[in-house]
Each structure stands twice: as structure tokens, then as C-alpha cells.
Length: 320
Figure 1: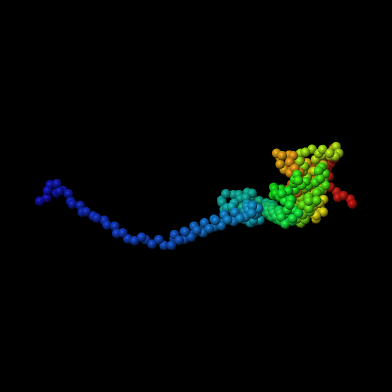
Figure 2: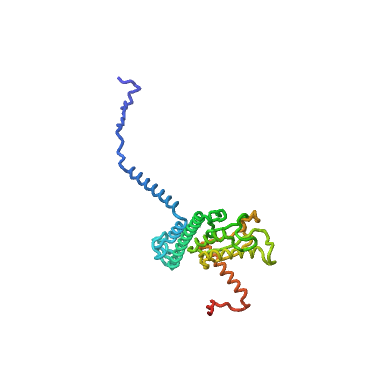
């Protein structure tokens, strides 16, 4: 007979669940493909970094300029980042088009601009290479010529923004000119002859300038000063370079600057400020100089023209 406390309840069965553990499922080869893709991407990345690091600045500029206006888009207005099948009207500069990219009639101008930019980048690269070769050539001449090796400390070669600057500086024990005169010393003549021979085949134009220290010119005619002295010394140096074989047409400018551009600004009376500076100009520096000459000539012509006179459209060729 069941007890009163359990008579109204049924006994619930006890269920025990046992999980059967098996081996890991097979992963397949998917991870190998992912790893290979990762390694390939890293290899491409490091190869790109190496190429960027070893490419010249001019070449990088040319590549950048090319991708700023893709060739196909410049020529035909073809597929580019602006080409879309959007339902909105427009595309490029031609708002009558409903889809696609339109060059807007600037293809020819864009190609000319691109070609000029690439040509300029190549010109800069060639310029840099020529000046580097010239610097090495002059250094080799100085080191291999016994007469010049003795005066090596007086010849300074420096690459500057406007080109290669070759400076022949004075020394208290070995002045380049007679005191207060523009007569070239024999050793100075030897230096100028070797430099002239080294530069005779260079394509770049040359600017030649004479410099003095700040000591006032104390003898000679009343109107003769360091300005005239520096100009005469620059011209004497020009004659030696031309006699050595440098074409006279390569010289774009010969000037005397007196003490206005000292080598040592804090020591204006130091003999090292007495020097001859030969600047082998880059093409860009030459263009800037020629433009400044043209601007000065145009201003002078305008000042000399009579008031109210009409300026001629073009200068007539001079009669023989």
C-alpha cells in the first residue's frame, strides 16, 4: 500500500546524456592558400618599397605625372575613375552625356602637357647626370695632374641648386693675380687651362664671376674700384678658358661682383673671399637667366620708346 505523500505523484525517469567525443574534423588545404596569398602580398610590398627607394627622383616624378592623367583617358576619354553607368545625367565636362567619362575636348592639350612634363623630367635627369660626370672628371684631373694636386685646397667643387659651382679661391701664400691687377699668375693659368679642357664638351652654359674681399682698392685711377677689378679678373679668366678650348658661346655671363657676395660672410676681409667662380648652370637656371635678360631688355625698350608711339609687333631683321 502506497504512502499518502507519494500516491498522487508519478516517479520521473532519470535520463543521462553521454557525449561521444570523436577526432577533429579535417581542415583541408584552405589555410595553405591563404598563407601563400599573404606571403605573395608581402613579397610584392617589399619589392615595391625597394623599387621606390632605388628609383631616381626625376623618374618618380615622371611616373606620378603619367598616372595623374592616364594615357587612354587623355586620348579618348575612355574608361577611368569617372566612368560610370549612373542613371544621373552628366559625365566629365560634357553635361549632355548620360553615362561615361568625357574629356571635354582637352585631349590634345592634355597630351601636350603630359609630353612636356615627361620631357622636362628627362631633361632634369640628364642634367644631373652630366654635372655629376663633370664633377668627377675635374676631380680626376686635379688628382692625376701633379701641377694641380699642389693647389687642390684652392679648388672647391660644390653642387648647388643652379648647377655645379667651381671656385678657385685666393690664398695669402699663393695669390691668383698680381696685387691690385688682373694679371693671371702662372699657376692660376694652369688651373684654368685644365678646367677649360674638361668643360669644352659640356652642353650646359656657364656663368663666370669675379670676387674680391672688402679691402678698398687703394691705388690706381680715382674711378677704379673693386667692382672694376673683379670684372677685369673675371674677363681675364674667361680669356684663359677660351684659349684652353672652351667655346666662347658657352659663356652666358661674365660679371664682377666686388665684395658683395663673400664666401665667408663673417670674415669679409679674409683672402679666401678673393676668388673666381665658374658656375656650370642647369637648364632650368639658364632658362631663368635668359628670361630675366629678356624682361630687362623689354623694360629698357619700353622706357626708351617715345611717349605715345606704338610698339612694333615684331622686330624687323637687321640689314647686312
